Image (cartoon, one colour):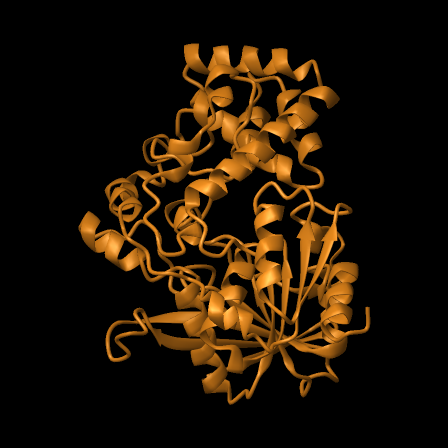
Amino acid sequence: MAVTHHAPGLILTEHEFRVPLDHAEPDGERITVFAREVADPGGRDLPFLVYLEGGPGQEAPRPSRAPTNPSWLERALRDYRVLMLDQRGTGRSTPVGTLPGMTPRQQADYLTHFRADAIVRDAEWIRAELGVEQWSVLGQSFGGFCTLNYLCQAPHGLREAFFTGGLPPVGRHPDEVYRATFATMLERNRRYHRRYPADRDRVLALLERIDSQDVRLPNGDRLTSRRFRQIGNVLGMSDGAERLHYVLERDPASPSFAHDVAAAMPFSGRNPLYAVIHEASYADGHATRWSAQRTLPAEFEADETLFTGEHVFPWMFSDYGELAPLREAAEFLADYEWPPLYDPDRLRDCQVPCAAAIYADDAYVDRAFSEETARLIPTMRPWLTNEYEHNGLRADGDRVLDRLIALARGYA
């Protein structure tokens, strides 16, 4: 049953849907998927725009009007009602957690149902329940991976498709992806150390302290050098260099240092899906076999002042206390032969109007591969820009979404 609330300037309707864990077994186990419908008071009859968040493992934004959050919502509500989907396993949807009571094999089997293809099947289930003929989709980062799968799996359900920093490679091996993103991270590190040259010595001093002393994070985990270097993940965002510098300028003996480091860690948080399913997001018909670990460039081994980015390593399931219960399941998933996510032939036949913001220096989703995918889709209008980083939709959402709508509709 839907529940409606009236917030300042918004009508919020909360939906819960019971969907199959495995859509290939519709009479099997069910999970809940939560979606929040957001509309202007006078816009409840507008067509739907479904928002798919990044991740995997991130819930949808929690909307407000004063100030408008997320920043693209004001523009969206001029043309649409927005359906913000808490993708399976996130937010108010049935949580994943550490899956207690299951064997590692059972955990791994369960987790195979949380990729983009399952999320799209959830969306189609919800579209049918709501009686919607077609809707538009906006995919940010991993949400764009879901949107591309949507174009392959159920294009009949789509009116328009918008991508922001999330046009994934098609048919590429995960090793190719991680070689490309490591190359980008090397350049991001060089830029960072040119801007803040004194931080090299700060990093070396911090690593020596971490290695010689028992430095604890707020959750009780011991901070290791390799885990500390993962805060380089922030370098892919528009404010990332400054965020990293402000962490490094902290006195490492102060309580605020540990809190700031924990906040910058990419794989800490409420949902382990981001770590355990991350490489599988790029597994378009492949097993990953710890791709990032295997393709780690020698430069990162030789220079301790280089930070890694959005890269998952097997040691994380020991160093991160919240991930340890899924360590053996992660090993099973690394060897799992994932089915393909995308169909090049269906993309070549696509008739859905599409537009994509491709960020020229994206540290997470490689520009060259995004452009390659864009060329597959005859209806795609790509917008290559160096004005924004990967968080362009968050940083300037009103302008970014407005440009994509104009491109998809042929106004720009």
